[in-house]
Image 1: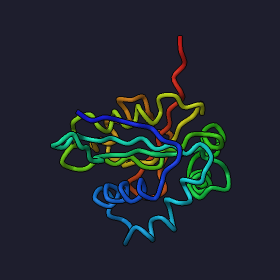
Image 2 (image 1 turned 45 degrees about the horizontal axis):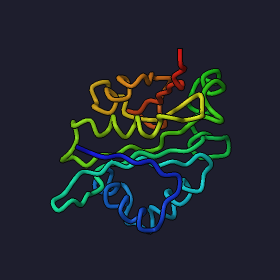
Image 3 (image 1 turned 30 degrees about the vertical axis):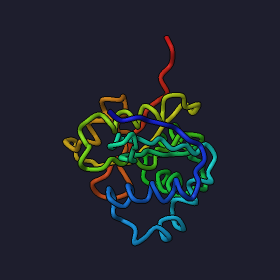
Image 4 (image 1 turned 180 degrees about the horizontal axis):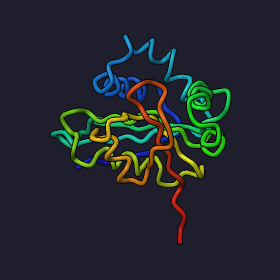
Length: 177
């Protein structure tokens, strides 16, 4: 069974550990230095940054990182928020963007997928968010497992994504009633 934690700052050691999972899941950056320079270090410095991590047990009482999810407070002037404002309907953009929680990335190693780790990460990351509106971009394929996860957790498609084959999803913070 996986264990989860939530942090709001990271060390170089945390970053190196996370990179190994990020690279295995996404494989879209040439190396750690490039990823840090173009993405990670920028995101970590943003207001409201938070990182959820999932660890699975190993022999001898040790654990290994098997998944992560992170995001931050999205604001005008940030690359994704500005792009989303261009491709979303203007009324949708006005309603959802600015001061929202931008779920940037959720990744789980292939060998432990379909065990509830993605759900655990998503719930750990969003469990006590102060932002009233949350956004993410994911596959437009309604049969994609990520889309199923987000829909089960209350996310809805609010418009197209940045690229062909993507959608933007949103969720409002649950209220106690």
